[in-house]
Image 1 (cartoon, rainbow, N blue to C red):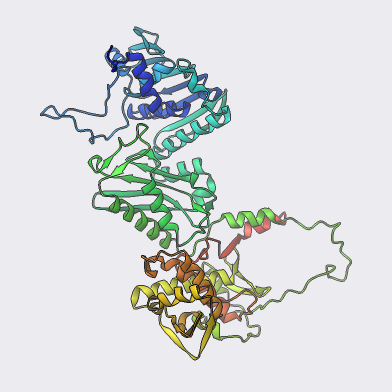
Image 2 (cartoon, rainbow, N blue to C red; image 1 turned 90 degrees about the vertical axis):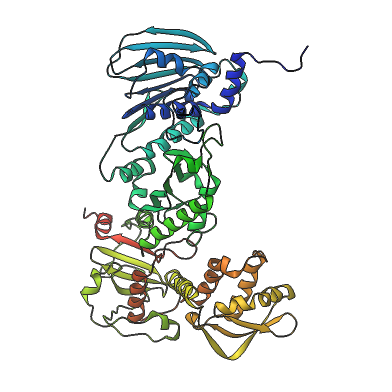
Length: 601
């Protein structure tokens, strides 16, 4: 007896189904993609018991003739590929998701499936497949306009062992919802709806307006993303990047809200996610992740979509080009946002505010509230402005000066007060701005250091008396090993005996600072650096540490010139809406929101 056996067709189909049909969401994905390639402008999905009991996908696209219907459930039948003039088939020439075929026989081999399709002539045919057994097509009553309805029941009844690996109804419903939402993002010109257990989960209307893409993103990701998104549109060497990226201060605790598409197909690709991390590395803490939807479009011969059976992974012919374009597009878009910060911070602040309870603080007359706390403020404003780079050398406090309303028309307004020697309060034309002075100045110094590095290096200032910093032997060795590179950053160090370094010059941009603590922090940072990589490759980490030490501290009293100079530099500096750790540098409260707090609206 031969040790090699030919499997029966039913078993072959069930094995193929294991590669494509992992769970109910996989079935929905295949059927909705088929409907999109059929030219549908409305796709409705209904599921019961998380898709295990029933899945119904209806579309109004081009229906199938009786011949196409019979072919659609045959193995290795597809609409994606076409033979060339010489009879060869190009497996890379895939520009569609597939008009029926391929997945249908796999689904029919593990479930009960009924297909009803009405072509453009009005003829309607139906076909049934149960556990791989096919019932020939037969005529059925028309159901309105042209289109196709595919109903899947008793999923995995033919392979009961697979049912044990499915999750709860709620988890399966969430996976189905995620699949449809991803496809809906790529096609704002198509309407989508999902009904689960008889209840409508969502319904997206088809739109063809100029802002259709952003409006669809707002429907899927929420109005908050729509308010804090930056539109991207960049191209290079035949590769185009389009989409929307959230501001760095509009972030999440996981990468679950990063949606990536290649030629309209949703993918989860390590290369693309790595490019996103690299682009946002300068703006977010390591445990925070941006929210975005990016669409990569390129010739089908420049990408292989057959790497994974479910088409969730791709392979690019020139991965460096794609990665570089994504990083460049995102950084250019974030730079164009200027000083913008997420509106989420204002919403959170307003949500935490509550009107004072009359019983908690009774009014005692005399025009004063009880136990009032005097705030340390400076109500001053100077229209002349100042160079904030010299802030570290100033410690005087300016007296009150008359307010000039013209500054209030600027984006970050005119400084009115400093609270607790930490926060600057500014008045704008339609609200107020509250600025964290340390976080804001830290970002400004950081951006100045990066610009100086891109020119000829950061200028240094010699210390009159070198500062000696004692360290552990290993820490001192790490600092001295990078002395030449640190000098490019304006920090000049040399050996001073065992376990100590002498600091002879510091970056001029940082002014006066705690030099010893800076050296110790840099030594800790260098622990994480690979010896094979230069500091220029980890410039963000080093500059961020140095900028933090050279920034104006909380608790430092500022005069009116200094506060307004800080606001003006923030307006002129890219990315000043967030500090080097991804936290917002300011919160904006609109006058309408404040009036709503007091019941005026």
